[in-house]
Length: 450
Image (cartoon, rainbow, N blue to C red):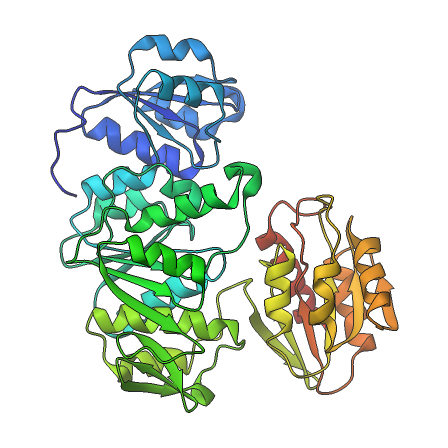
């Protein structure tokens, strides 16, 4: 951990716990800050807060009292999920109190450089690919951020010999001040999280923050096939590395004659890549660019790309049962993600879909249903998705109680050579705590098939 005195005797409020808040509070306490933690969950139901209390950290639980702003805090470290319209956050900004996310703290204490990945879709796959490529190439990577490992906790243990590969959400990026990745990546940009950001322009601005502190000594890897992302690149001060699945960019990564190239150097034939899906070619191009900038050999990159079948819950191949392939894409919590998953298959598909009803319809899914021979629905949106399927000419439709019962039902309707795909196009919260739990239930049901 980098020695720093900037938090010594500084009065800091950590707002919201979860893993990132707990880690940030502990690190700030070690750095000599006067830390107060505030979390909505009551102390009696909050083991994380109880643990911090035992460390000698002041804890206030059960509400976000606005009176906290009168206690002279010099800094707030905010949980990314807490919106800026929260009265405590809004009041702090009006008083001129800086509000950061835990990612900024990670940067302040890290000895290791960062490779930061953001975008609407593909972040986790790209992050994991880069990590695996650097690991195979013996470049000492550590993985962190929105992928599930707290960034400041990783940074605390990192040395100057390491590389921190970090997945970043727009929520996290809104709370940075000095954070400067050596390599920044934007995979793509679509409408998302507009309930949090208010508009696509604000969402795009949050994503663009990943490159705002970069200089010409840093690199910005960007999707040259998306005009909104190209506009971000035009404002970046970093050295630009474009990637494209449709055009040839000799200063970046591209596809030509069925092969992946980086700066006119052939890396691998597309036919050798184990990860399914045309959309994953964009993630692969971004990952290859970062790996090559870090000096990873083509041999190491090929070793990863010929064996990597996907991140858990993201178009993850599970197994083949009687010549039917099963895929878990529980992370497809919106129509766009499900559309991309469906476009990955030329074989007949048995689609498992449904989940939380957020008030939207599913007509945008229609063009992607051309290879779907049967539909199994569940959850609150079952009826809405069934309507779209009927209008698309799908004749085999069955409604079940949940993902667990959907698996044997899909198997019964399938034939040899079919793919059975869980790609819900909906969030999981009507029946499951997380999309991971939903995917785990699907996977377990597949393994129970005889």
